Length: 337
Image (cartoon, rainbow, N blue to C red; front, side, top):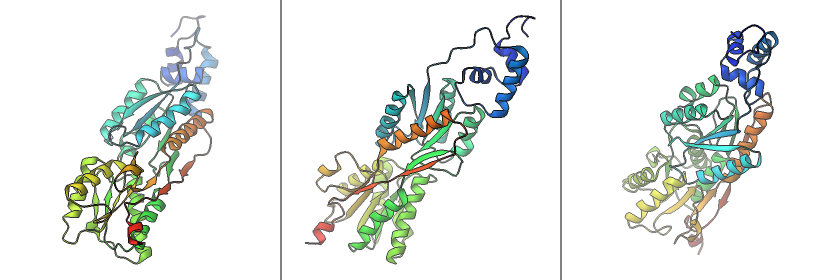
C-alpha cells in the first residue's frame, strides 16, 4: 500500500478493486471496454484512494486480425479492407495466421493479448468457441467475426453464401446436368455448412436426388481440392459438373481435371465459389461467385470501431451481397449452339 498522503500506485488501486493492474489502467485511460460492474469497482477505489500521480499514457491503438492468410488467396483483400479503415481511424493492424487450426488460433489470440491490442477481428476456426472465445471474454476484448458466422452474440460480417451456391448449382441443373460433384471446405464452419445447404436446396428445387458420394471434402486447400476431384473423377458414375466451394480448392480442381486429360467445359462443367484473380483469362474462363472481400474487411473494422465507441450498441450481423460472374466454364453457351 502507498505511504499515507502519497498518490496510490496502480497496484494499490487494483488490490482495492479486486482487479488486475491492466484493468485499472484501461479504466483510467479509456483504452479498452471494461464491464460496468468492474468499472464501478475501480471507480470506487479511485474515490477512496485517489488517482495515481501519473497515469499511464494511452498506447498507440491497434487491432488484431486473425484469419487464414496462408491458406486462402482471398485473405489479402480482407486484410486490405481492414487496414484501410483502421489506418483512416488511427489504428495499426497486427496480423496473425490461424492456418484454420484451433491451436494456432488460440496462440495467435494470446499473442495479440500480450501486445495489448484494443480489439480483435477473427475468422473463427471450427473449435473457436471452446478454445479462443474464453480468452477473448476473460480479457474483455471486443471482437468481430469476419467471413464466417456463429451463434455467439457478437458483431459479425460475411456474405450471402447459401443463396449464391444454390444459384450456381441451379444453373448447372437447368442446362441438363444431373450428377454434380461438390468439393466442400473445412468441416464445421459456417461457410461450408451454408454452401452445402445451397447445393442441396438447388437439387430439391429441381427434384433431383442428392447422391452423398458426390459431396467430398477438399479441406479448403489446394491439395485437398485436387484429391477430392480425383476421388470424384474416379467414381463409377462420375459427375458431369463440379462445384468448388472456395478458391484455394479451385486451383486443385483445375489441376486434377488437367491431369485427367479432361477439357472444361467440353468434358466436364465447372462452377466455383470465389472469383480467382485472372479467372477470365483461362482457356475456359470460370463461372464464379465474386465476393466483395475488401468491403467485408472494411465493414468488419467499422463494426469493431463502433463497438469500441459504444460498448453497449446492439449487436449486428451484416451479410453483403455476392455477384455471379457468368463465363464459359459452365458450358451453357456451347450447349445453346
